[in-house]
View (cartoon, protein in one colour):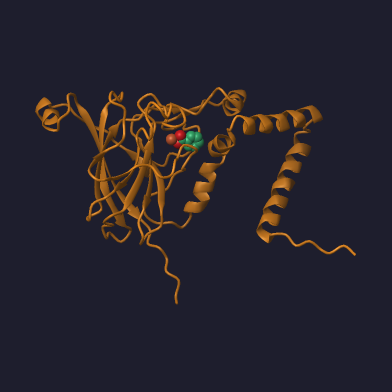
Length: 274
Ligand code: BEZ
Ligand code: FE
């Protein structure tokens, strides 16, 4: 006699819902067998080109972020995206992000404070920072390891007052890779591949929930049409330019520089009653 199989209830419910939605789309749009085979081929190619994370993050991660963020307090979250790498070099603030001897782009000093939502400074908070360079390239993915391992990536430890200052470069707006199946799909549905310039941060502290977010800049041409849909108003900052030669020379720079300051607030970890 066959025994009844019991599956994971949540997974079962979600997979059934997904299949119901997909079957509904097939019926509603009268998907032909040829179109069905093309769709299967698209996913085979996406996997072969290593673009599954990119495809999902472009089209779906912002929605997952919105759902996850419901009821959360403090600084707004944003998507992690496919270009995060764990175990970046550990540096103490103030510091300079790892970079090439002639790293292109404008100098940026990113500073701020990490606090709990109730205002208590989170001394020793760790800010895992990653970004594109001034040409929109991410180390490891678009810049060869031999040229610049960990370029513009680091885990930065804030001081005992939660304050930090990081010297880096102003990132550039960036196109998600357009030469593979994800780019081809975007073109086929008439969507551009641009993201506004941004800095990625993943901030951790023992007493608080992890904050994964991004900072954007006013005036960016793509701020209102991010292909990923990850921009939130509260995360848009203003780059302040410092052009006084006495000022930039005193800091040891040979040219004007930009600053951005942001105050981060992390939700307290909820402790379970004993
Ligand atoms: C990014 O931040 O670069 C990114 C995020 C989601 C999808 C693709 C790229
Ligand atoms: Fe990014």
